[in-house]
Amino acid sequence: MESLTSRAAPPAELVLEAVPPELGQGESGIETTLERIESLHRALGLDAVNIPEIHEESSKSRKGERLRPFEPRVEPRTLARHIQERLDVPCIINRVVVHLERKRQLDWFRESWEQYGIRRFVLVGGERSDQSYPGPSVPEANRLLRERLDVPGMRVGNICIPTRRGEAERMMHKIDSGADFFTTQVIFHAEEVTTLLDALSECVGGRATPQVLVSLAPVRSERNIRFLHWLGVSLSNELEDWLIAGPESVTERSLMHIRSTWTEIANHAAAIDLPFPIGVNIAPIGRISAATTIGLAHRLREGVIHFAGASDSILP
Image (tube, rainbow, N blue to C red; front, top):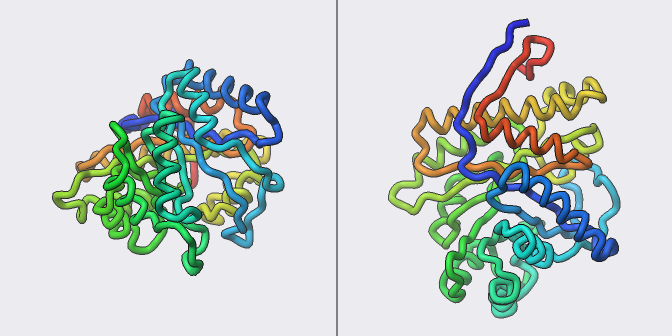
């Protein structure tokens, strides 16, 4: 069949999301994680490594299922120090800010800069909006860092959920409180992001423009998808059925869909002359091989997606 090619702008920044190893794995777990990141960085020249803070949480969907029981993980900033010292790759540390009162929280961030060399943070709120926490909200923590922490080159990020009602206005409030970049929840539907970009471009006004990192997650099995449901990721029944239609081809279908999704987002951003940059946060789910991640990242950076024909095409 005839091959079709579509071209889109490459991401402004390519970031790898790397989950810290389980605490019980000790130094060998850290070393294995470092070796994997090193191989990816050698092939790709990563702009940053994004390290989430993992907590025990309940499922956000009745269709959700954890890949394995929760186990405590190495602290993100500990892994970050190893990465920055060994690979000279800057790290982004995710931090849930609601669990410590303001002074202790501020001390934690100051220590992260002075002892771990971290300059870029993503501030995360509590799991439940109806629960009272001892620490600050995300906007309050944004202000706290901006007003009380003197870190050269510090960048303050927040999470955005494109499907959440009024998200653009919520992001503007966070920008006003000190956020200068955002990382999206994992997305599978381009229209979720393009709709958000439209709303953001309309209300950003004279404010400082943020960077947005779009989180894209290759998967390799139906079980991976059930874990994404656990995290609250939006995935239509139609897309899910298509991804798992052939168990042996889930990974390839996933990669094809991601490349198409990025092409649609990047082309839309160019069409509306988006006044701020968008990058990609690659968040592999499950045992995605290094070669698969490298191949995907190269395609995204090249800004090219190939469609081999009807048998390989994504959902209409």
